[in-house]
Image 1 (cartoon, rainbow, N blue to C red):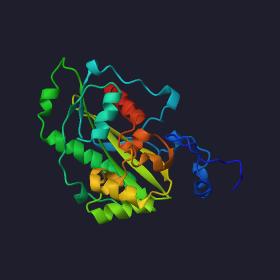
Image 2 (cartoon, rainbow, N blue to C red):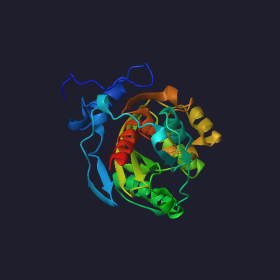
Image 3 (cartoon, one colour):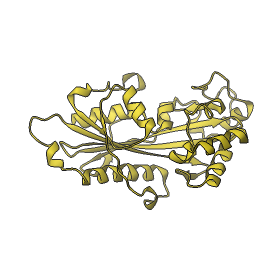
Length: 271
């Protein structure tokens, strides 16, 4: 492999990746080397009338559509996730929260891309089943959008969702120490006024320094690891010092890509 390739800079910490991380980087598939973070995305997919069809090509990161004025439409976040609420609030959106309350572990797929999209759609369907959709389709009313999402962590080819036991959480976190994981997030935006549904994927990678056992035990004792996919809480002050590099966006790792959310909201209001 040519020595001209270098791993991406750490987007969260100023420390350069270690020699071990550089070695891991050079072992990555050739099509990922030297590629800007946004180009790590799988080809986006779009839903229309409940069926998957090819989506428009992703916009360049410098030309992402601006978020529409929150006063011009109503937005419902189909999640109780603190991180997702924080992300949408930071984007300037006003929204209300509804939860799907589905048994996520009853929905299984071997492909992480497929799994997160199926789960994001299932959450939308569950919320819509409790709503009177006709109330959102009155002439002259502002359009109402419902945004649902799901994320999984993939470590050594294995899908990892929220850990259930302390031992499972410990196994997850010890496995990340000195290694790296991928995150796969699926986002679905449903226009309740028109009935159109759009969705796509966002991916990222996180490289870690060695994580001390004491830090792992403190995270487990706090209990926060049981509320997030793979027990991975990137923004936690105990976790952050041991993040070596992020390929992609930190908001994607936290559960909701800002760029993807903007794009889907923009398209949902245009259909």
